Length: 415
Image 1 (cartoon, one colour):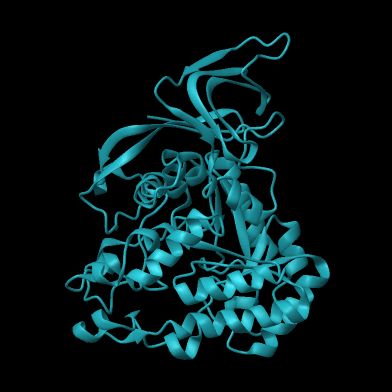
Image 2 (cartoon, rainbow, N blue to C red):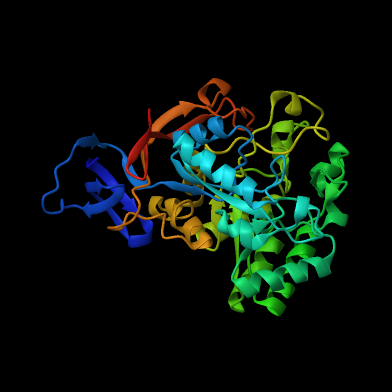
């Protein structure tokens, strides 16, 4: 169907567009901006007055415990593509499993599903999974999720193999031995509360090791959920050296610190943990200056797994439906312009993935988010489509509400 989206503020960070104009869609693609192509007749018109029209959000980290519910949550949050970690049950270590996930996502017809294949069989950190077959089945890269590869030689061999075939590896940098017993950032708050700490060194030692292996192999590596100022500094140094290393930051880490644990609030337990204010400030600066992409780190957790003492509660929070408003909140606090903020959740993730998405140029897939930047809504369990109702922001007012989401030129969500 031919669609005209009119009267909206079109923001396309990749192509430097920010103006009130019309967008024209045909055959699932963007075919015009500002002026309809010759012979174009709209079968449907969407009035976006008072709204921002931008590329659909691309989330670099979202677990789909219930694929139907979580993909519905994605499009309700303006997210049109989700990168899925391989730590499902069973792990995505066989091409058939990845193929099934991609096809199931296509059948549901909501957000696009971009799986990460398991780097090692069973995510056990030993024998390599069938990477070539997983790639053919639709995996965009390979990862251990938050499972460690404790054998550094095994990681070296995996990176050598990946580099040979041009595959990218995604790693969460956390030294197993320094983090295995910890549940919170090692600092003043964990000491006062008597919680076992995870030192910043757990991240920096892992980053240092990975960067050295990138130096030796030339493998492209994306570091997921960086959490510390020292970790950011190490990656910046590697990037200045010209090494193919990128990273992302969970949106909660841009807004919260170890102090938000309060009196053992299980909704503030994350992996990696919320760190010090100085770390949050460094992460914010990295995102503000375009060094990092932002993701939701969406981890739907059942109520029973959160209604536990802090040390026993499962880490994580719902994120797909709050990625946009929390990014807008961060941008306002950090003094970041709306186009730059949107770039961190559209074109920047697309660049990490090496995909031509995350933009509204003519010929691009019509994956589009239309949202009211001034509309407010209260984050309550009832307001969420995700099966995961857990969030440190429960009860808070969110600013920024999605009105419509299009994927491949189809309206897949309408408020």
